[in-house]
Image 1 (cartoon, rainbow, N blue to C red):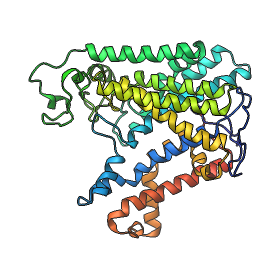
Image 2 (cartoon, rainbow, N blue to C red):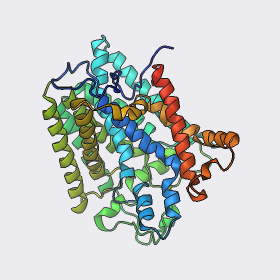
Image 3 (cartoon, one colour):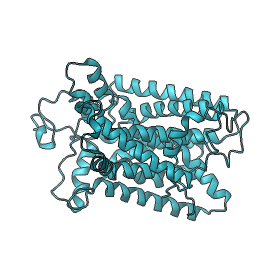
Image 4 (cartoon, rainbow, N blue to C red):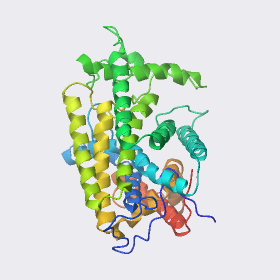
Length: 421
């Protein structure tokens, strides 16, 4: 079978990472043809972290009501209700950021092969459409009809991808900064200028209990759940599509227009990718990422505490776009230092296997995890996952499914089968 690659990653095959110091980077390679093994590993680590949701750790932990440690674990591994951040909230921003990082490598590769602007644009458009359709397909599993929803990470990437390509192709890094800033300021203004609901408005009509403790007040109320500018847009836009019933609100508060500020997150990744493609010394690149990462976290936090824009992942506020990109670039800096600079790669092989087939993993974990668990129970017995006690059975079952999914990707890796969009 012809080997293919993940177009979302947009980079090239990694050297064998099982050599403890394979490909140690001491001097800059040709930036037009280099591949970042660290980016593949970062992607694989993030994907496995996301896939661990099939282990149902938060649900199991919450059942131990008398254990503060269990409750803390449940809190860390689930999204915050509205304002704030936990590690689980940083999964989607990391994916968005990595799309931006990989794009300069993808464009450089295709241009080196003689691709014209037209062919590059057609490729970007087709990739965007496939991502949007795949996201809708996965969100429609088990439904009686197509579920036209656009808040899935794949659809969000797809909605912003063509714009990201145009920014990458036409704008130099300085103007890319300007573009990201303009996107965030414009989106902030749309929320800030949108009228608040009238006094006495019954928020239960948009899925928010009257006594919901996470409601914002004052100027921050412009970013409240399901009464904001983008929620109003969805009440119009999503009802343009055939639906099982009219759309009124998203239970989690997620929004189609999140793709606009998340485009800025991808542009921040684009800037990191441009930095990594330069001929600067690796240490300079590393320090640049660290500085920008710290600055992003600080700026996002300041915008939150000054009351300019609250940190809300579910609606991707401008402060969140900046704050989460800061964390993402620090994560990338860590993997870049350990893997591409120091060359310590053997430990990262399990993540590399997933990172080089991330689209396949995303699809499989949403479609066949339950089938794997049921099949194991059929052939090994219903109690196979009770080895550590019935209370922990969901974790054991999910872990078994995760191992099975990794083995599928390992089989693909060994045969150089990399799913491409």
